[in-house]
Image 1: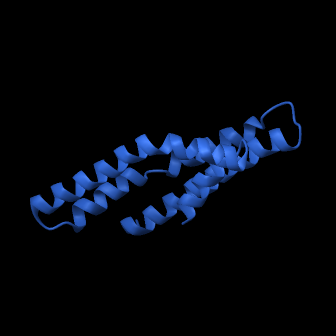
Image 2: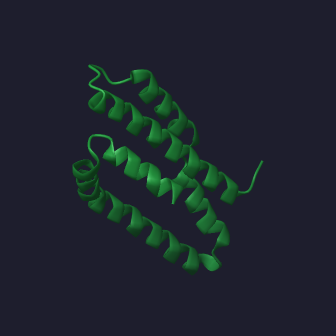
Length: 117
């Protein structure tokens, strides 16, 4: 049983690995001229991310345990909700630009870079 921060870092690294696998699989299909997407790689990446990516749950838990009082907890959870909503609004625009700049696997590689950073 580890600390929440260690689990958060492990979740970020596992997610980065998983999205890197997706980007590699997509790049192999389109850059190497393969007629199929390497589904084994995609399925394996989804298994990894499904088992380890709990970033939102861990972040919420960290906010609740590190906040002092109900008002601060509420304020911090509200900020988290605003950031998540902003991601849902802005994310598709950034993803489409990443695909234009990085090709078919650009969005997966951008996600990988965000989780590593």
